[in-house]
Amino acid sequence: MTTALVMAGGRGTRMDLDEEKPLIKVNDKPMIEHVLDALLNSRYVDKILVAISPNTPKTREFLKDFPVVIVETKAKGYIEDLADIMQDRNYLNEDEPVMTIVSDLPFVTADHIDDVLTEYYKRNKPAMCVSVSEELFKEYDIIPTLVYEGLVPSGVNMLIANSQEQEQTIYITDNVELAFNINTLHDLDKSGNLS
Ligand SMILES: Nc1nc2c(ncn2[C@@H]2O[C@H](COP(=O)(O)OP(=O)(O)OP(=O)(O)O)[C@@H](O)[C@H]2O)c(=O)[nH]1
Ligand SMILES: [Mg+2]
Image 1 (tube, rainbow, N blue to C red):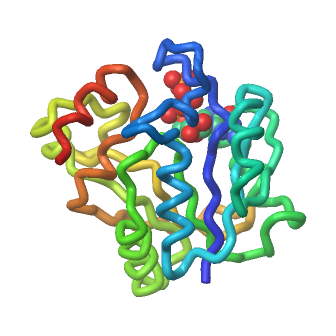
Image 2 (cartoon, rainbow, N blue to C red):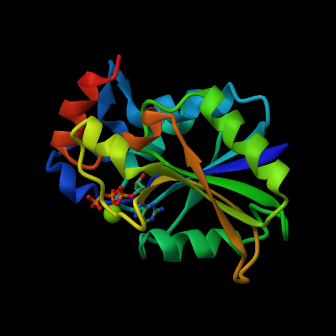
């Protein structure tokens, strides 16, 4: 069984809305709730941590009704806050595998999560980055934030809880839903093309 860590303490500046980004609704439901539903329905995830920060007090309040553990982070940045949690033995055991996931991936499903975990345990390597082909982004007219050798990180990663550098493999998924990382109003608009 696996622990999932949802990162939800960013400022959401690119959305340019007053609402906290994890709470922005897609199909009448806050984005973070879509992510939590996927994790709660996964066959392999048995614990969910959510990293909030002073940027996301309303998200914290919203989470009261969910079976998740709230982790307070300082909003030092995604990488820095993640590194702090990975070393915090109040939340994670040393060398425990963790799925990290962003809160703005509203079309992710339990099947996607289980597919990633099945692949991860098959590979037997400490870290795995789930990526989507840049071609899929072009098809759906969405603009990726970061492209590396034709691949775009989806915001879902596997790693083990320690502070050491870890050998990482890349898992290329065909699930276009994992390309819809909502960063801007344009992304939200284009998500209407998913059926
Ligand atoms: N705990 C924590 N979460 C973060 C931090 N930065 C980003 N996140 C979360 O990580 C996920 C991906 O980050 P981004 O897509 O860049 O979101 P963001 O930083 O809120 O938005 P921008 O200000 O437009 O970059 C989102 O779910 C954020 O809430 C941070 O410093 N601390
Ligand atoms: Mg950011």
